[in-house]
Length: 175
Image 1 (cartoon, rainbow, N blue to C red):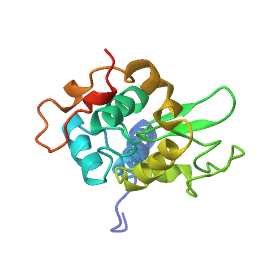
Image 2: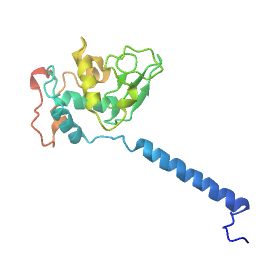
Image 3: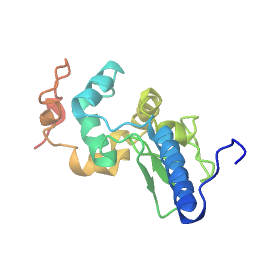
Image 4: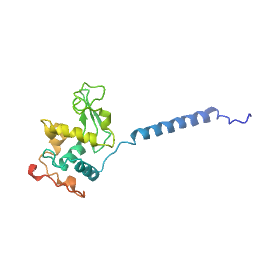
């Protein structure tokens, strides 16, 4: 031997090379997903309150939590692919045909942003875009899940156990 390390040969060498490839792929996947987050309910409630969503156009933190729960399960990386070719992105499931540009769907891009920017743990841009959605003529009715599961319901349970100043908006409850 010439002093350099010899490479493993045969089946052992192939297995070691395959494991090396698997490790590299796993590391790459961890790097890609490290910036996403599934929020805890109270953590998200505090972020939403801090961003000024409590009482925004008459909607309370409970409205936002309920909607985000049914849209994405509080998961910032959630993407839903629709039959019409559009997709919905992030914690608020903002649609690529209207609110962001995914580079595929023809879009109005009313929030002037790329859809991939809605898929990380930094949700201030998501919140700013969601405010635009709510400011449109449909309000929170733009989200079918809010209409089905949240509108007219007692949303106070969404704030239970959260140490914050937001109070449920009881003037809009009907059941």
